[in-house]
Length: 239
Image (cartoon, rainbow, N blue to C red; front, side, top):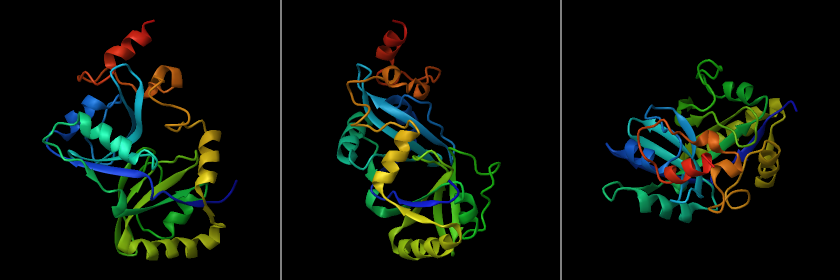
């Protein structure tokens, strides 16, 4: 494998919350320790009171007390309902799924390709896995995340729809020098399975807990908030 693939991640569900209490609210409903630091991306779950997995998602801190929650396309309404159910009524959950076109550049040559379309710093020391930042492409400000659902080096680019066509065409043009392939959802599904990444609804559900699924790395008992499902998890852990 020597090249790079372009994936359409636009259908993935995207929600935002912005509030002085946004961070503490997320800590209450997420199992992982959510970082209130701009650019931090945290993989986590939300549970029911029995410890079953209700949502499988990533929480991204865009700015202090400003977060974007990213989950599966198929669970958009379900996840929205679950999150709103457990958030304080004073916090508004905004569905921004349709606000962005999201391009996934994945593969060994993804860093080389993105460097030809942006002058920002993509070196590993300054753009580590699990982080995000604004970059500029052709004068357009774009939120970039260094994450990958396919198991290869890669970047997710959040482009406002009015700019998406031009950015796409630029990627395609510059990608010719890297043997860029357009890749579909079935390709992504195969690669995430090869990488051992799980998918809610197929591999995990409310019937499983994180210990059964091998996802207990996404549990933080150290944070000082009694998150939903914590007591049930501790009983499972201590069995």
